[in-house]
Image (cartoon, rainbow, N blue to C red):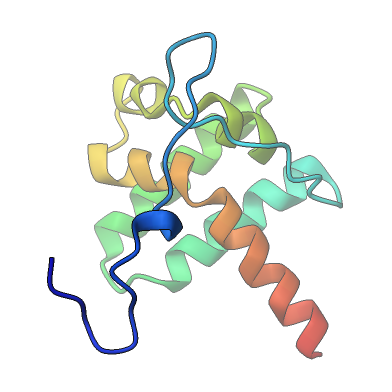
Length: 118
């Protein structure tokens, strides 16, 4: 197999999922996000909205945020459950719902990096 410059042809660095008891190939680990759970949900929504100019998408993120808070969910629960279908069934657009449940760790790492650099 051809390799790109600076990359080995060794497949040892390829991430392979581990199987959980439920059959989910990826088992997210608890992040230990500090702070108030509801405040973090709002900060997460603001972060998502800051990454988009589309007003409809921003409204969809707000809808996901409102549902999260209304159901008493926090970001750790969202991340561990990975249940985009819940949000889709409640009327959140599919792509937004998928981002909402999958980007928690990205947000957390971005937030950590900002705190370190300040």
